[in-house]
Image 1 (cartoon, rainbow, N blue to C red):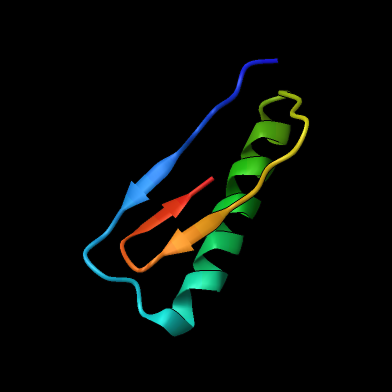
Image 2 (cartoon, rainbow, N blue to C red):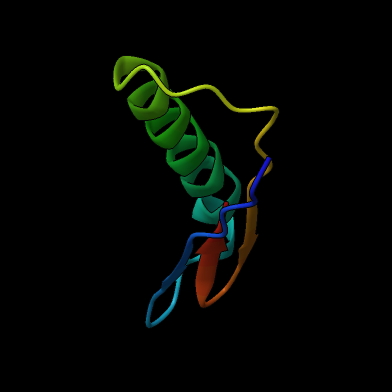
Length: 54
C-alpha cells in the first residue's frame, strides 16, 4: 500500500493548541477518506510550532 504524507505549514501554532490541531487534522482527514470510500492502514499526526503533519 502506498504512503501519503500531508504537511501543513503555518506562521506559529501556540503550544497549547498543537496537540488538538494535530488530532483535528487526523480526524478530518480519516473521516474524509472513509466518506470517499477509501481504506487506509493507519494514520498518525504530529505537530511542531510551525507545522502539522499526517
